[in-house]
Image (tube, rainbow over all chains, first blue to last red; front, side):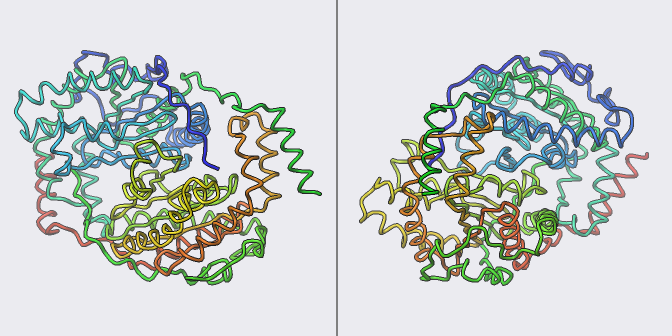
Length: 300
Length: 300
C-alpha cells in the first residue's frame, strides 16, 4: 500500500530561459545587467493580448494548462521547480499564487511564506532554513519572500555590516547554481508596483474593516526607504540574475497583467522540460493476468 | 516590510463534532464504538441532496465557502486545523484534496503525502516526523496518509511485534489529545471503497497509458490482505475515534458523494470555531493621519 518513492536522481534542468519571455525585453535583466526600476513603468502590459477580458481568459487557460503540466511534472519525477516572489508590501505576492495556481491541486504546489527568522534559525547561516525548504524531485515550491530579504532588508535596515551582505550576492549565486546543477529550475519574480499604487492599496486596507488587521506601522515607516529598497533590489538583479536562475521584473500595478506575465513564463519553462510519463515499473502482461485473476476471484 | 508573525498563543479548539455530520449516523464511530466496515455500503449517499448534479453544485458552493473561511482562519490566527486522509489504494485521497480545496489558494492549505520512512526517520519514534509537520496557528494541514499507517500497515505486514503496535493506539490518542488541547481541530477521514470498485479503478489504470506508471505489483499483493486491513482500521476507529479527534468513515465509491461529505464536515467544523478578524494592531487614527501625510507628500 505505500506509494513508490519518486525517482530521486538529480537531473540537469533544461536550458530554461523562456523565449516567450523575450517579449519582456528590458524587464528580464541578463547576468551583470544594470537596470533602473524607475525607468520601468509598473503599469506597462508586456505579454498582454490587448484587452483586460482577453488577458483574464488567457490567465484562466494558462492556469488550466499548468494543472496538467503539474501532474506530468510529478509523474515524471526528475525535475524540481522553485519560484521566488519578491516585491514591496502590497505588490501582490499572495494574489499571484492564488491567480496563477487557481486550478492546481494543493497537493501539487508547496509554498513557504518566509517571515523574520526565529532564534534557532538566526543561530545558523541565512541559507540554512532556505535549503531545508527547496523542492524535491517532482515538486513545485513557491517562496513568498526568500533569501533575497537577507540581502535587501538586511542591507537597507543595516541589520548586518556591509562586509557581510556584500559577500552574500556571490553566495546566493553559488547556492542557486548548485540547485540548478542538481536539477532545479529556478524562476525569480520581482513584482514591480508604483509608489502611488501602493498608497492606493494602503488606502483600501484602511477603508475595508476586514483588512484593518493587516495594517502595520511598518507600512509607513518603510515607505520613506523606497529608494533604498529599489537600489538594493537593482543590485540583486545585476549580481544574481543568471542563466541558471533568472530574475524577471513584472509590472504589477494591474493584477491580471502581473498574473498573465508570470503564468506565461512558468508554463513556458515547464513546457521546455522534456517531461514524459514514466514507463510502467511493472510487467504489464503480468499485471493484466493478475487483474483478470482478481476479477475471476471476485465473480467466483 | 517583514510581515507580523501571527499570534502564536495556543487556543483551545472548540467542541468540534459537527452536528451536520450527525446525518452520518453509523458512519461516525463514537469513542470505543465497534463498527463493521462490511456493514457500511461504500456506495451509500449520506448528506446527499438527492441527485448528482445537485450534489456537485453543493460541493462547488462549499469549496467557495471554504476559501472564505480559510482567509478568516488565517487572519484569526488562533486555531490550527489538521485533516487526516486514510483509505485503501485508489480510494481517492488525492482526488479529495483536489475536490474539496479546489477554490482555496495553495498558500492557505499545506499538505504532506506520507511515504515509507527514510533511514533517519526510522531511527526515531514513529511520531517524530509526524510532529514536525502538524499545523501551526492559522494553518490548515492535510495529511495524505498519516501515523495511522504505523498501526495499520505495520500490523498487517508484521513489520513490528504485536506488543509494539498494541501500545501505539493509546500513544496516538494521547498525542492527538495534546494537539487538541494546544488548539488543534483534528478531523480524520477514512475513504471507504468496495473491493469491486477498487478493481474497476485498477482496470482504468491499465487501460489509460498515462496512468500505467502508477501501477505497482503491490496493488495486487495487498488485495488478498483486504480483510486484515479492514480489521486493523476497525480497531483504529474503535480505539482512536475520540471527541477530540473523531474518525469519519466516508463512502467513497462515488467521488462527488465523498467530496460532498468531507466538504460539509470541514466547513461546519470551521464555522463552529468562533473566528473573527483581529482588531487592528495599530492606532487607526494615527494610521489615517500617516496615510494623508503620505498622500500629500506624493502630490506635492
